[in-house]
Image 1 (tube, helix red, strand yellow):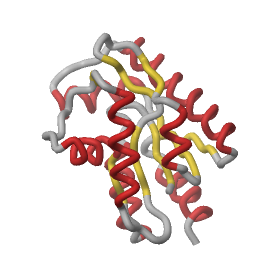
Image 2: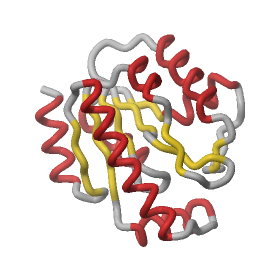
Image 3: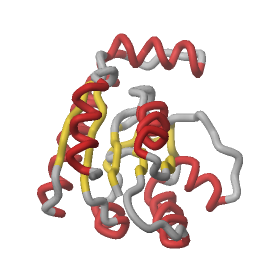
Length: 171
């Protein structure tokens, strides 16, 4: 599993869809797997009330998938809780789902705000998004160190670098 992390609005799902098509490998979105497992309608609400419980749903959903070979999973290392506080997803989640490689997608805060505005019709505070993106990168690095797996940071829109990383991984 190649785990693509990044904050909301950075472009993970769009990028992963493109990469999955290019490399002819499956792609899954953690939030959609969780929604399907909970049998809930997928929500665009970015404030998550039950972060820890959702990770159990993700693990269960991934355990039921029958995939041979590489696949992409886009998700998060941190989320915003109901109080808009940056909250780390428990380390145990990543230990259970066993990613092989971690790639964190980043972007300029202004670009992320623009995506939110166009896609969801609202705006997050730029300082919150900046702190959120920094926390995402730092925690992803910690997880990769603990799991002893490769870690990359890629800029959204830098398709050449991202394709280079993918070409080294998938051969």
